[in-house]
Image (cartoon, rainbow, N blue to C red; front, side, top):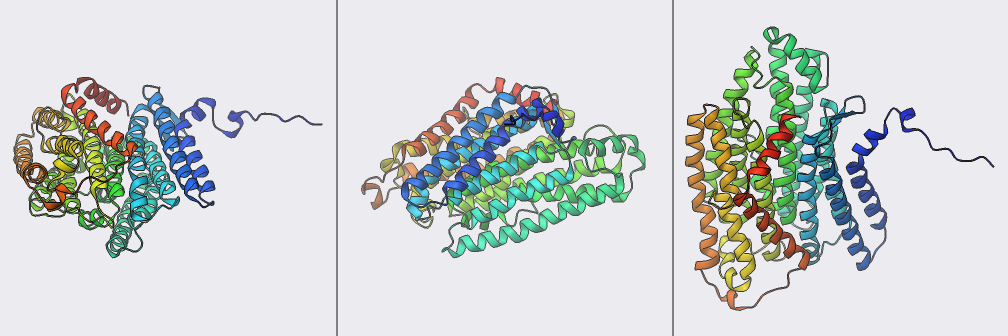
Length: 502
């Protein structure tokens, strides 16, 4: 009888080190496959088991990615992907957002009578797309990963199939998201025509050697590729989809989109701008264009987001415009990075803070919402301090953080972000950013006024049950938000380090 032989991985064109580096991706794929297999069975216990499998797969994937931070850079699949600290650091961030969303969703789906196993599978699929996108070093790989992420997100947005707002949100997101993907793909094709390469390092090498001779085709391709991701991060004037999609999507998915997708998109934007020579001192018209146009987009995002949020009564729409404003602050970090000693460190620190406080906020909204995502207006928060004191306290932490009030993550991340912009000589940009931040204090603190200073008959009606795992997840977000605000230095150094070696 012939014995089985183990195939040497090197014969398949991949080394054992590369297989180890792909570990987090294998865990996510394995969890997705196992969840899909069990979703074929029916029953309450099966649905809970799928929830458990996806949560465990995300947790193991998170730990596997965290272990990879600090390891040497390693190209994979002939350089189409890379395993480095930058990619694994962002993997931790997006998986963390997915795990929180999974934990907060089980009770929500029971309440909405939408306990379908496909929900959890789609979250893992979308997260896998984010992970691949962050590690991609090739324009084609970025596009494929972008579609894996986006197609899953389109379905999740419309998961409340009987709700017209959810259907409308899914259709708007699909149409505009597809247009953004097409714009990115067209830009990638023009870049290939102008440079003859598809890899980001190859584009940078070509740009470096021919910096003074790049024609308008290169600039057009670069801008189209950038616009595709400015749509994903909801920057003005590419923000038109955000309020309706955030309002129509299931509340946990709104939190997932506003954190995971935004973090992954900013990671790709950093890699893309680096490949286009942004801030490298190369003489070319594109460099000046990038700075000036991103400057205008950042200011418009902050102004439009904060001013329009003042008039919102629906909490999901208010936080949608808040997300647009935060995109403006994050773009300040991109503009300042080339000329600041901190580099992209403050930007990444702000992203971490934003993920923690936004996930926590939407976690609270998930717990207090009524069936069909009702009771999510400002007036519905009246008396929350009596119905759920601990939810009111955590919401206070998140609102103080978003407003940039110490001692929270929002304050220190804005401080370092604005300080790095001052170092880069962007004084007027910082002045406008601070003014916009002051405007935002009004609508964030207005939430707390309704929670603590308004009363309603419902405040005497008792409480409704909140699952332990959801409560623990929200409490963890509040603790992280406070911990970053009290002791941010080590996390800032880590953020600076991982972005220096990307």
